[in-house]
Image (cartoon, rainbow, N blue to C red):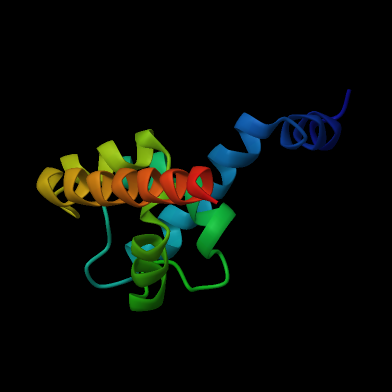
Length: 113
């Protein structure tokens, strides 16, 4: 097996693709002012590619996008954001409570119809 074949094979596995994407994202974010920590980059790479990859890493737009997708973000990403001080635990709890209340209201309305 040649080195190129080994690399091509490795890139087909999702964990390797995510790690490579995180490394690329890390390089892009390191050049931005106010860059987030490596832990956040690694924890949120999948969320970034799922929801906000149309925005430049480290940009104000990507931060707004990730914030707007807060309820869909993985627990791993949310925990990393809280640990890094990017968002407060109080804000996360407030948003979760609001989402649960909205969900509960929808299910009551649906059962009343």
